[in-house]
Image (tube, rainbow, N blue to C red; front, side, top):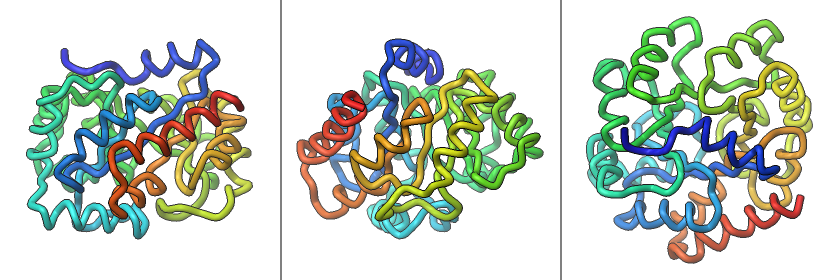
Length: 260
């Protein structure tokens, strides 16, 4: 089976007292997007989330929406993204961020199989309700693809426990109510949700949404196992940052997390 498993790799890193860093890149956003992905891994990302461009990305804010539109205008499709991923051997686990329209259109078993063939070992499908995720979770699991579920600050305790039970790879805690995008400060709800999740599961707990730089990453990781950083990096990519400059930004976050 191609690709590194998400949860075991993150657990190994966590057990070495390393705060985890998952970064994001929109597939197809630039001709060199795969090289950007590899640069992120070299700079210290523990796993990388690849966004499959979609015309109605309801979870994503202006930056990732712009990246999706740029990728779509370049003719990017889910099959083209996965074809490019098949051409590499990533040194860290790969996940996709997508929407249930794409999953259901392909069929859950076929979609999971296509991910696995491309070396993708995890998937985040934020608009697939927990109550309707059973078929996808089973089919993805049979292909070695972990279903990563999101938990919001307003999620009740009972449902939070169910999310932790059915989430694989890691549990994705959402720092705030809203869409992705850089913020000037970290929401107070981040620490509260991280502590709630850590009390319910031993799976890696990562916090994401609204993390704009190293200082916010350190703050978000204080009560969690790590962070997911997306829009801040994609803003740099869209603004023309070179592969090396993107790597420097990832490296700065990595260094700050290591210093604590």
